[in-house]
Image (cartoon, rainbow, N blue to C red; front, side, top):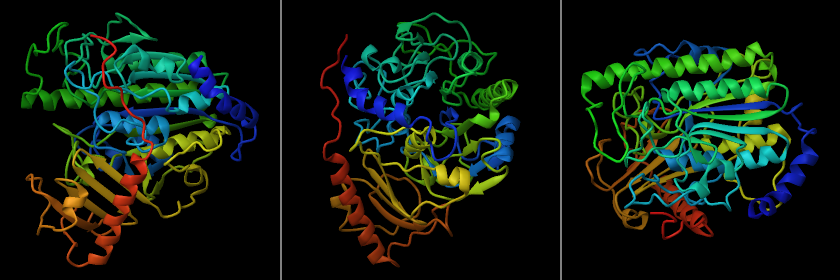
Amino acid sequence: MQIRRRLLPVLLLGMVSMTVSGWGSPPNFIIIMADDLGYGDVGCFGGTRFKTPNIDILAKEGLRFTDFHSNSPVCSPTRAALLTGRYQQRAGVDGVIYAPFDRNRHHGLQMKELTFAEVLRGSGYRTALFGKWHLGYEEQYNPTHQGFDRFSGYVSGNVDYFSHIDGAGVFDWWNQNSHSKEPGYTTQLITQHAVEFIRENQNRPFCLYIAHETPHDPYQGPGDKPVREEGSSSLLWNHREHSHAEKAYAEMMEELDRGIGQVVHEVKARGIENSTLLLFFSDNGATGPGSNGGLYGKKGTLWEGGHRVPAIAWWPGKIDAGRTTDELVMTMDLMPTLVELSGSALAPGHHLDGVSLAGILLKGRSLEERRVFWKYQEAFAMREGPWKLVLKGGTPQEQWSEYHNWAPHDDGRAVLALFNLRDDVAEKTNLVSQYPDKVAAMRSAIESWLKDINDGATVQPVKSFSR
């Protein structure tokens, strides 16, 4: 009853506006999120190590984003921003929700937060998530309670691709809100469920969220064996051994690309490609054997390699083929995009931090220039046009008073650095000393942003509900 009462205003508004979208008939949505996929891991973004023909075709037939950023350099926060259209700090998921019981396993996306699945379901869409959730281990946080009609997958940060055991030794594969023994390789299982869902819902509007595990570790190709067993956090063998990890990563990338090809093939086979918007992107930058394509940094850092990720929008007949945009886009922008294109509406006063990309997708319009922000642990970053400010070590207040002559390497020192990404996307030249007024204005903006997102931010429970 709590969920229904909270959704009623959204349901009523959504049902009224379902048929009056300013962009024509409401489309189907397919959202494909890869896990730890780097900017240089796919061919259409300059990658040469792996063959990704199906992803490359999406870019050839659609729109490629060159300045798309995950809201966080790690998993859970980016997913919270995607689902809610809000900064993850405001939504109460500031960091990774970890598997071990002695950490924050009891945290999750709280029920007061509104997801795009809830909005679209209220507008008559059939909704599904197949794959990774990572927004709460407790059953109360299950996706079926947060707007998804269908869920098959796992709720942790990663599972063994075969045994489906998480990092704490807990079995983690679900059908709806119950554990389910479903044998198979995770990438293939996720694809199978996605294809079946498209087939079953081809004659009604649907929103399909495909959250792949690939290429997150453990590094296991389709022909490998389990690396974890239930009841133990010990590894059965070293999947990170260099030569094996390199080989497995390539196989994982090929399987990811193959699965995306199967999804697109199903859409075309059902004749619904002209009424389906597909969005593909990653939750953060690469790590391990992955490539960030010449960007500095990696997953877990606020350098460009940690959060600038490959992204593609595909909608035949609506999005002109072969386009590229350098508009500054964030993961949190997808929620308001889905709301606008579906003709849905939010309850008055509901706050979103993201902005709709409908104009970029369909008309090639530019977004109004804006400031966007990142925070992860003790690091902060901000963009304003091509300018990027990076802060690391201690609180911002402690860092305002000094900066170091600093070249981009993460050696544990406090840093204050300014880059013009138009000329220096690799973040090699620190311009702090040349532009003190800009640094002062940007650091002041970060202080104001922190105050804003902390005011009324969703709070996590103190104690676990189980174990």
